[in-house]
Amino acid sequence: MIKKIIKILLVLIIMFTIFKFSGERDTVSTKRSDGLIIRTCEFVLGRQLTLEEKEIYTEKYVVYVRKTAHFTLYFLLGLAYISFLKEFNLNDKKLLIYTIIFVFIYACSDEIHQLFIPGRSGELLDVLIDTTGGIFSSFIYTSFRVRRRLHE
Image (tube, rainbow, N blue to C red; front, side, top):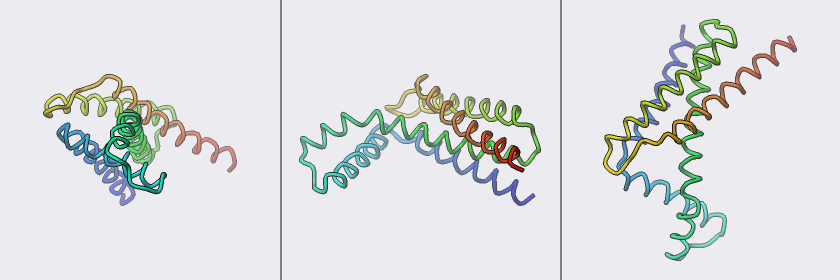
């Protein structure tokens, strides 16, 4: 019982984190991703970037950073959710189907949520990336379960 509680809390924490990021105004969200790009480039290059370089690097990498964040958060959500569902002794097929449906519905609701945030928009591509992250983690999780059973 305690494992179920911990696992559902983990799912809820990840969902809250996604909701919090999605609720940020466009200026806050842009500042966060641009700051990450600039700090990473400065760390890799070992020096401060000029204003011009900051603009070049942020423009070059912003899409990759933002889409990777989508994929990663939903990868973690899928992993946490499938781990929670495992506590109900479902077969692997049901684990995968239920997790994919859950991640897809949450991704859709997340994009709808963004329609109400100033400067933000709901993107079908983001739903696809989010769902792909959840699918990817679900297949990895299930693969390890199957492999472990084969070696027992």
